[in-house]
Amino acid sequence: MSKIVLIGANHAGTAAANTILDNYPGTELVIFDRNYNISYLGCGTALWVGRQISGYEGLFYSNKGTFEAKKAKVYMETEVTAIDFDAKKVTCKDKSGLEISETYDKLIIATGSLPVIPKIKGLDLPGVEYVKLFQNGQKINEALDDWSIQNVAVVGAGYIGVELAEAVRRRGKNVMLFEAMDTCLSAYYDDWFTDDMEKVLKDNGIQLHFGEMVKEVTGNGKVESIITDKGSFPVEMVIMAIGFKPNASLSGGVLETFDNGAFKVNRKQETSRKDVYAVGDCATVFSNATQHDAYIALATNAVRSGVVAGHNACGTSLESVGVQGSNGICIYGYKMVSTGLNLKAAEKAGFSPLYTQWEDTQKPAFIKEDNSKVKIRIIYDKNTRRILGAQMASYNDISMGIHMFSLAIEEKVTIDKLKLLDIFFLPHFNQPYNYITMAALTAK
Image 1: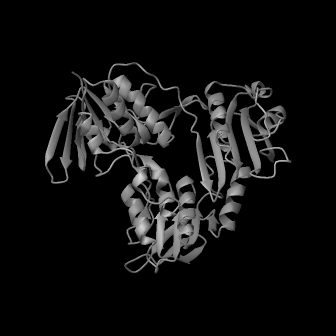
Image 2 (image 1 turned 180 degrees about the horizontal axis):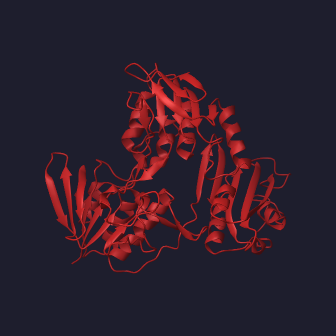
Image 3 (image 1 turned 30 degrees about the vertical axis):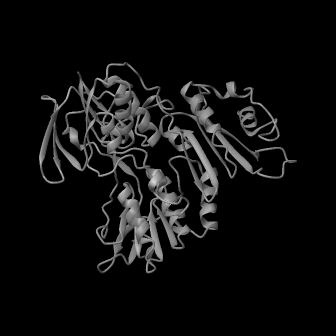
């Protein structure tokens, strides 16, 4: 009987564990996790903090008992301190200080990611919070009940920062959103879309400080102000949301890593060491847009990687088909979705990108209700005509459309192939000359 040790039991780890336990009942599985809870959907933190859902309970979808009922051996609040790859042994310490060792036949590392902590003075002050774990969400949620906290700075205008800015504003606080780049969501969207999001944020009372570098957080025993290269602003709370880095320190330099420190894996989630797999935010993915390894930390990628590793560790050969980095956001009802590369990313990857775009209502003009404007941009390579990315936005829910573009990138579809794609028409849903067709037809 094979024995697998799994380090980390959040999204990627949970997917790997369920794959093993549900499909390979003869396999011995030992799970280590340093947290006291697992499977927390961090993407729901802003919804919970912003009172858009009734509570946090629904943000968990698994627990220790579920794994134990399937015959796994589970150690919670247990920190892995060392891995001996030659002896195939993992050494840990539980919360009481007791040392535990387990040998393995196969090892799956699912250690996830850690918040990026910049070298800024004052980040150790009470009132500075980070966003990652359930416990972080708890602290922020409880702090916002304090009437003395009226001015909150959110640092970082990626997905999490923008979502939390909305959430904190929904709690009636004055919110300042700081970002070193000159716009928000710049890793995913072009200016045609980020300009819209800026307007949505401003219209709802969020103060934008883009193109502004945070230098220091000051205060006497607690947060009192945030200082940037453009001024000083009084605040009682600072939420750091500038991104994540792979938590890949456990290998001790034994496993091959990507340029940002993530474990390099192949399509089977195998690392450079035999019988050792890495999944989720601590590992690379294969980007179908660039046709190279990449680091794209998304829960969807984590879950798929866990499934792939679980099967391969148990002897069933299964390869990932690669990813496009499909993603989306909804702020005050404005929905933006994207997949693949935006213009800057395409240029950085060495392509000669062109784009075609269209803006129109979702349905014919005679439909008066639930008929918002939709904008779409499709990015493709000038030389090969291959679709590299797509972005869409509307107050209508047009999110399903981005899945088609995700598949198009995976299958290397050209912009010309899309021009006369069979897209149905019915006034309840769309227009006969819809925005996807029109964008494709007007491509150069």
